Amino acid sequence: MAETPGGENLLFLTDEQLRKGIEAMFFAYRGFTADPDRILEGMDYGRAHHRAIHFIHRSPGTTVSNLLLILGVTKQSLNRVLRTLIEDGLVRSEKGKVDARERHLHLTDKGQMLERELSDAQRARMRAAYRAAGPQAVQGFRQVLEAMMDPEMRRQYNRLKEGG
Amino acid sequence: MAETPGGENLLFLTDEQLRKGIEAMFFAYRGFTADPDRILEGMDYGRAHHRAIHFIHRSPGTTVSNLLLILGVTKQSLNRVLRTLIEDGLVRSEKGKVDARERHLHLTDKGQMLERELSDAQRARMRAAYRAAGPQAVQGFRQVLEAMMDPEMRRQYNRLKEGG
DNA sequence: GAATTTACGTCAGCCTTGTTGACTTTCCAA
DNA sequence: TTGGAAAGTCAACAAGGCTGACGTAAATTC
Image (tube, rainbow over all chains, first blue to last red; front, side):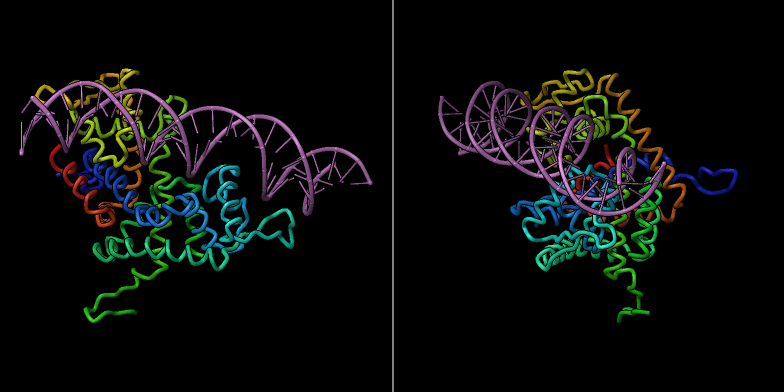
């Protein structure tokens, strides 16, 4: 057994173990997005629309700039997505009352319906995985993912995680 | 505490917990790809090239069709990536001796160098995350990811995980 | 009150990476 | 031996990233 001065077993840090983790991330992410992708295909929407819908649902009334921070794309790119969602009546955009430069975004009833369909599918897979692995594993899962984020993303994540 | 007939606590399966897991996947995957993306930008390559290089390194001599199975894209899409890698002398493609329709793929020395650079970066982040979370967490991480894969992907993953 | 900055929208054009369709070469089995 | 399947290539298109430039309204600063 490989032991350190501290006494812990470090076999879980071998290149081989790390490679397995890398490949697990790759294959699992495919599963993670598979169900929503399937629902969206055929509609005129894609993964980018799903992300926008998710975070608008998550933080109703959020502004465009805030969404830009979270999604990490350019405003031109986000705008294209948002425009189609607004035109199609899934998202409502309203001028800020305190700062009229801002646009506050909400899902319409129609938007809520699609959000529900997408997140039901994604949660179903997540729930099955969680149930199969058990609570202990889930805790570890979340710990490793959190440690893998860029610090700035971790801030975004934790902000969302608690408040709203 | 929410208890089932079986007696286990199921609080880890609430929609709220699942949502946190979903967002953790989203933000963590960004971190996961960030370092290789940074290295690739400026070169003429992208994430698709990285994936091809990774799995050719992983299974030297693999065929195009085998790579297609693993990557889950169309052969036309893979072909474009492969063509540039071959033209640039990172990948060597040789006609199969037993079946001349097949092309067997290998990294050249130049290809090995780039692979090394990319995987060093990705492993470094993975290692930091693993170390921060600890061996117990890593085990849970792997369990949940594996449970999240599509069955077919899980087969691919396990085939790679053990043999070569 | 004028100048600057901020938030947002938009046009144009580019790149990567996915897609389908049509095609050749090669192998194999009926 | 021939016809179908498998492996790979070429062409064209779409989604969704990107940069750069510009416009407008509102807020902030000087």
